[in-house]
Length: 337
Picture 1 (cartoon, rainbow, N blue to C red):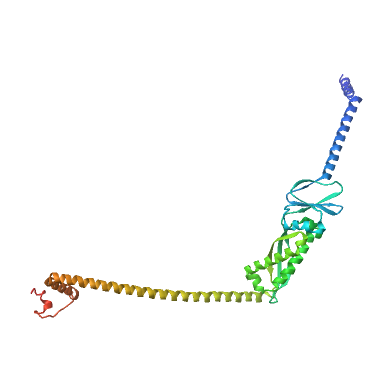
Picture 2: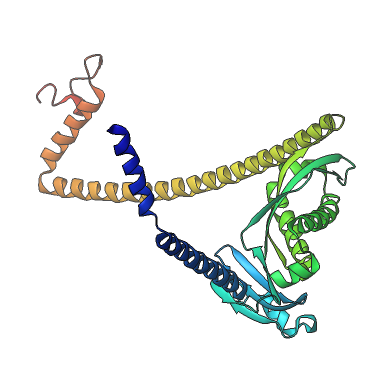
């Protein structure tokens, strides 16, 4: 009974898959494959007609290896404006912007270039100072591609740009360092900042036709050979001592000047104060004499009594012994006469 049920179920399953149903499924799959193929073909054709430039890129469009269009960040950049006057790049279309752009498929090709700031760590090189000291310096430079057309034509790759930047930087660096003594390279930061600015300006002039702009140049590290370190350090110490002596001399001179000015001012102030005091004393004495005269004129006898008492107060105290005649005018008030 169980075997018959199994056979019947198997037979029913076989009957479900009729040839008509298989043909239907096959047709659907075939149509789906055609749709997928069409979508892929459309995408391929669309990609051949368009290209994108993102926020960190610039692009150069070539046609049979000839530049016909560039997409840049700033159409008003001086290096871009110079393309219009350069016969070598006559007829180039210059666009500014980001996003989706169109091109002629299979004929035009697009090459993308970064617009980001690129840091190049140069190799350490040996230079010689004016005082014949050998120094190893290690620089780094930050640069960017400001003209993708001239960059592609004259340099082409970032590696080639680094090689050219390295050559130009060190040629000018050797020239500038050859004008100064070794201790200035280490101790005088203001001079070095000015020197590096000169190097940067020179390098930009030399690389102007390469579509490259140097943003910053810095000396990352300086190292002296062991044989030259003692003499350089001694020269630096002597230089610092000379500067310190000059500061001390200037300070002492300023101190003497300040003391002399203060003394002169004090003398003037004392003289003015003495003059004012004498004037006030004279006025006080005159006022006292006037008061005394008025008091004497009012009651001469009382005035004589008051003046004598004031004299007693000034000359007589507990430790004073006076020997005086009883009939002395000075003693008449003591004896009550």
